[in-house]
Image (tube, rainbow over all chains, first blue to last red; front, side):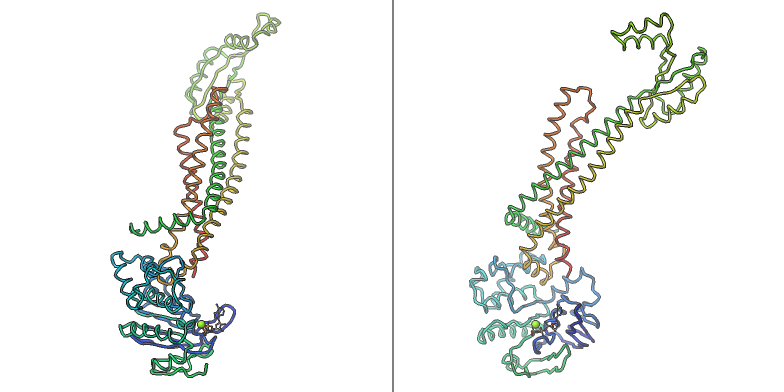
Length: 228
Length: 295
Ligand SMILES: Nc1ncnc2c1ncn2[C@@H]1O[C@H](COP(=O)(O)OP(=O)(O)OP(=O)(O)O)[C@@H](O)[C@H]1O
Ligand SMILES: [Mg+2]
C-alpha cells in the first residue's frame, strides 16, 4: 500500500528533513507517526501527498510511483488519499454539507451519489443534524469531524492526518479517535502524525518514531515513548 | 466537459465577477479602451493601404514617343506593348489630342500658347495602365527601353510618399498595439490574481482532494475570457458607430475618397477585436494561475 525505500528529503536551504527512511505500510493498518518537533513528521506526510518530492529513494503508494509520476497523474494519486490537518481547513462560506460535497464536485463524482455519500459520512462523524451550519457555528471538534467527513467522502484507501487532535481538548480528541477507529475497522489505512502521548499509549497501534529525519523505532503495538 | 461541470464553472465565474465588481468593471473598461484604439489603428492602416494601392492602380504610365517615329512603328510598338505581360490597356494619344488636353488644362491661360503659333511641340504618346499596382515600376522601366520610346513616366513620387506614410503609421500602430495589449494583459491578469487570491483556500483543498489542473483552471480562464470578451464587445460596438459616423462625414465632403465600405469590413474588424479580447483574457488568467498550479 505504502512502500518507502531509502527516502531522503533535503530542502532547498539544506535542511535534512528525512534521512534514508524505509518503511512498508499494509492495507488496513493504523499507524502513528511520533517524534519531537522538527523531527520530520510533516515532511513524511507531505511526501505521501506528493506536496514535496523525495530527493532520493523509492516511494510507491496505491500502485503509483510517486517519484516518477507525471504531473497530470498527481490528482489521481490524491483521490486515493484522504487528508486531515490540525487546522481543519474548511471553507468558511460553505455549509457543512457544501464543504463535504465540494470534495466530490471537484473530482466530478456522479451527482446522483452526492446526497447519499455526504449523508453517509455525516452519519459516520455524527453530524447529520448540523449539515446546514457554517464552520464558524461549530466547535473545534465538530469542525474537525467535518474535515474528516470531507476526507473520507470519496472513499480513499488511506487517510492521512497531521496532528488532527493538536488543537482539541482530550475529551474531544477521543471523539475524533473513535471516528478514526471506526474508519479503520471498515478497512481504511490510517497514518496519523501526533504529539498526543495518551492517545498513542492507549490505542496500542503501530508506532513509527522519527528523530532528526531517521526512523528510530517501529513497533507493532507501540507506545509514545517520550515525555511531553 | 460534463454539463453539470460547466454549470458549476459558469456559477463560479458569475460569483467571482460579482465579488470583484469594481475590478471587473475597471478591467472591462481598460480592455475596451485598449481594443478600441487597437481597432482604430487597424482601420486606419487598412484604409491607408487601400488608398495607396487604389492610387497606384490608377496610375498611368505615359509613354512619350520619339519625334521621328513612323506610323508603322507606332502601330508595331502599340502591339508590342499590348502583348507585354501585366499590361491592362494601351491607348494612343496623338500630338493634336495632347495639345487639346493641354489647352483644356490651361483654361483661362490658353493665350500662353499663342506664342507657339501653329507649331505643336508635344509628342505622340501612349497611356498605359497595368494589371497590378506593383508592376508600374518595372513596366515603366521596361517600356522606356523600347526603340521609338523617348521616355516612360508615372506619378511615382505621390505613390511612394503614400507608402512611406502608411509604413510609418503601421510601425507606430504596431508598437502602440503591443503596448496596449501588454497593458490589457496586465490588468486582466491582476484581476484574475485577485480572484485566485480570494479563492486560494478553495484551490488548496481542490488540489488535496484530487481536482485536476484543468478543473481548477477553467473558472479562471472563463473569467478572463469573459472580461476580455466584455471589453471586446464594447470596443467593437464603439468602433462600428465611430466608423459609421466618420464614413458618412467623409462621403459627404470627399465623395471620391476610397474608404473601405462599412460591410463586411466592420464585421471582420469586430471579430478581430473580440477574438483579441478573448485571447488576451485567456492569456492573462493563464499567467496568474501558473504559479498556483505548480506544486
Ligand atoms: N519548506 C521547508 N523548507 C525548508 N526547511 C523545512 C521546510 N519544511 C520543514 N523544514 C525543516 O525540515 C525539518 C522537519 O520539519 P517537519 O515540519 O517535517 O517537522 P515536524 O516533525 O512536522 O515538526 P512539528 O512536530 O513541529 O510539526 C525541520 O528541521 C524544518 O525546519
Ligand atoms: Mg508538523
